[in-house]
Length: 172
Image (cartoon, rainbow, N blue to C red):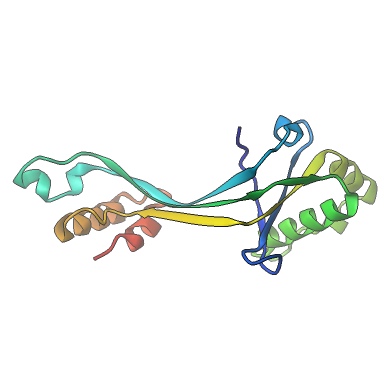
């Protein structure tokens, strides 16, 4: 079972840091007996690559579609917690991070204290000390230089959500 969650990295906790987040109390994942390690997957920019962008399609036709992506997997033992003060700290830090680019940021004190307390009772905190980090990046590096140029040009024209970022990551 997996749940997409916003996570914070506390770099000063242990050699690789610790991840913090929270999930809804009704989510059955927190109530599972966790034995061993948890896994957090962080996806970077990704995009579909049509073989029509490859000059080699016209040369020999031995091409097919693919997906370019970046991802990092982080693992470690998982601890769930219910302490209101710890939960408040995690929620406050997550809010600060995601409101940081707003001119008029929302802060927890904008809401009534009893509302925030009720919201905290509806979540469970998660802490995962990081013991292992593994990354993977597939950005058409297996293709010829001409095909990679075709991919970058195709992404520049198509302009779907992650296309500009993926185009920058495709090697020359």
